[in-house]
Image 1 (cartoon, rainbow, N blue to C red):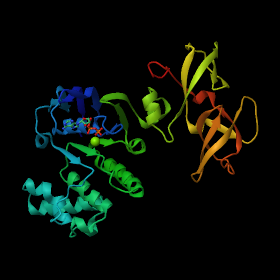
Image 2 (cartoon, rainbow, N blue to C red):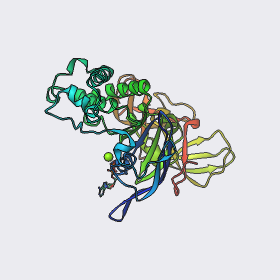
Image 3 (cartoon, protein in one colour):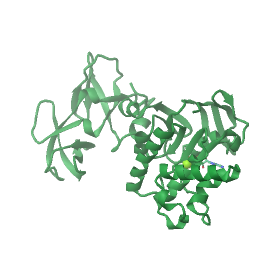
Image 4 (cartoon, rainbow, N blue to C red):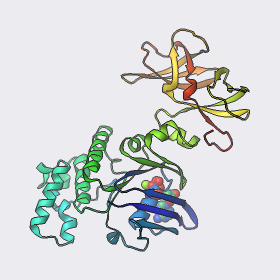
Length: 353
Ligand SMILES: Nc1ncnc2c1ncn2[C@@H]1O[C@H](COP(=O)(O)OP(=O)(O)O)[C@@H](O)[C@H]1O
Ligand SMILES: [Mg+2]
């Protein structure tokens, strides 16, 4: 197991800086994810760890050893990409065996290792097929097996599930998690899909425009987003963000579009704050109650155990999650914000308060 350290990493392409100073330690055996919107620099940073791109500044260490000048084979990393990049004319067996053949491993060992890894990823029955005879999910398993068979120091995966359909992505997610538990190889995973990042990772670094916004466990990102960007990026539907005025001090009382909410704890706030509230932290009822506001359901999306509803009140729109049934469009509902679940952000710095 390898500990990966990135220190002061910067990268420019033609004078444009796309990685703007990244410092990170990825612990031995950790499943670590770079998460962020398209174009934020995730692949560039992963390629820098792999040795496929040279950083403009900064150093990369594997277990304390400076590997910045080493080639990808010398770093002993294995990469899995979105496109499986299999050899079409070779059987599944030969595709998986390829890295071992390159190393001129003895035949017996190739045989044993390929079969062992194929069974790890559920490909035992497919070894003599060609890639064209496999489904998308099976092809991605071949790509994974080919990476695993080398027993690399570090696994690097760049959106490996993006080409699969939604259902298969979820199945493969579980498999990746199981594989990581069995192999315990340090893994750096890249995705733009927050749900995928949350479900797989020990820790996640959220990127925007080449800068880490927050680096934390999935639950920390969800419960205490460090700024507005993370608050909006993590969670589905995105957190409701509303302007609020602080109308009295002591334990502050907020006016959120005409709704008054008294916070539990005493704290210093400026006159204006941004309030964030997740859909599940908006309590809905068909009956009026103390400190409840009322609004009209504009859209209702039944999702099985719960429904997502968009409520309009005072010209504002709000997403709420509810187990209430019969809550179709046009229905009047009453709601309140659970005060302990309110997130506060500074409107200027956009940081969490
Ligand atoms: N080889 C390159 N030459 C010039 N610009 C590049 C190159 N590779 C990436 N970029 C730019 O760097 C930025 C980050 O790209 P990338 O790392 O691929 O983002 P992500 O993987 O997060 O979508 C983008 O603006 C992209 O256009
Ligand atoms: Mg990318």
